[in-house]
Amino acid sequence: MTVLEKEAEMEELIGEGRFLRFRRRGAWEFVERTAGHGVALIAVDEGHLLLVEQYRPPVGRRVVDIPAGLVGDEGRTESLEEGARRELLEETGYLAGRMELLTEGPPSPGVCSEVVTFFRACDLEKLHEGGGEPGEQIAVHRVPLLEAREWLERRRREGTMLDPRVYVALYFAQSA
Image 1: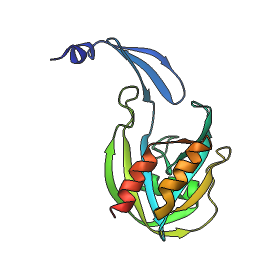
Image 2: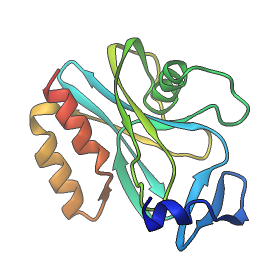
Image 3: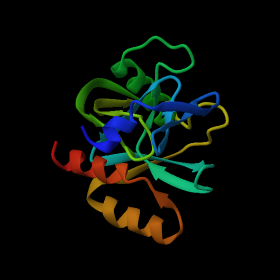
Image 4: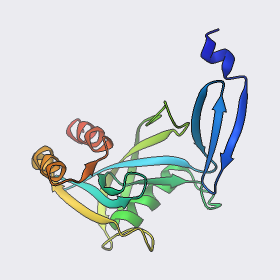
């Protein structure tokens, strides 16, 4: 057993908010979600990658990302696939005819216990403009897949932060 594994047995709650708990295991501090499981979506519509952009208070900037959100939060009882469909529709206005489970893993295992499940959204139908729930102010971008890397680089140079998951989306979109 490693030192970190031994220290994991000594856990304390440092603080708790509405959505997160701050914990210490031995010398390691991290956060965990109080409810919900993360989902992220790779959605390509007629050769265009669907991306979202919104202001993110923790980094104090606008961030380009893939459609994503929480399943099982706010007292919802839904499967990961149902929650992923809901998030895609809320954020982008697109309904997925079918979903394909791709992979799952921890996006930031050094600081958070969260696990995110990635789905490919297929057979898309646009129902409305998207934009998220009230107050989210999500901008939807439909970026030609063949121009996505250049588009992302241009946005980065303009000062917009890019969530690395956009590159995960490019990988899966190009390997479909």
